[in-house]
Image 1 (spheres, helix red, strand yellow):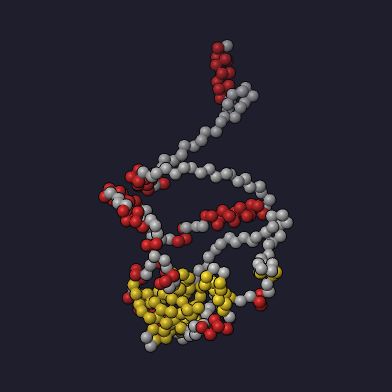
Image 2 (cartoon, rainbow, N blue to C red):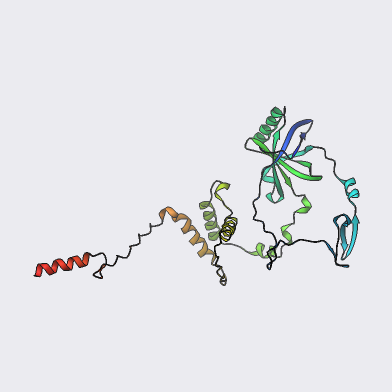
Length: 299
């Protein structure tokens, strides 16, 4: 059974929809501990004062914000608590926008919302109305004592809530040094047409279950093999000098590969097994038998 991590209400206008919040994702990462190469013992992290080389107890540690190199302003927990946003227990929707207007770069963490007891009808009303209008609700919510920008949207038969980055947390691509080079680069009409054909050939409906984290699977297989006592031979990686790409040749080769498809590839010819040696030194004995038959005929 899933456990709710938050309960409150969706608020828009004068309407309140009581809801519970559930996690919607479970990122899978292979995590390693730091060990001593000599003893295999797990390394302990210590908080040390570099001016005295002494370990500092947790209760003697305070928060500090660096305003200039090596100059800090200390802040107490009480001072931060006084500024904490009020846990209003509401998702306050301020406006509704089209989903296409939201750049995915703003998305952060995903959750599911479910109705609490007695709230199913209001929940379903909001879900259907948003789906019919094709709109996403943008608002604010306080989670774990932190105010978050969020997007509320229908997904399947439930509402999903996605926390978002604030506008000043997303960096503009204009800061990239290569922007000018990108703006000056021009593709020919033929290259553009072939690129569009390649995109059309590779277009498909999104099925997330067909994609796998192959690197994580290989790491887990490596761990299992080593745990079973297998010796792992590591091949040195050979770096090849990257040649300047021939854009047209690459597009043509890519289109040809997509159009041929795996079903059009010729079936591999079955490999012939080497005939077994017989006492006469022949393969499967047939030549030897033929020689003996010819010998009898002559006699």
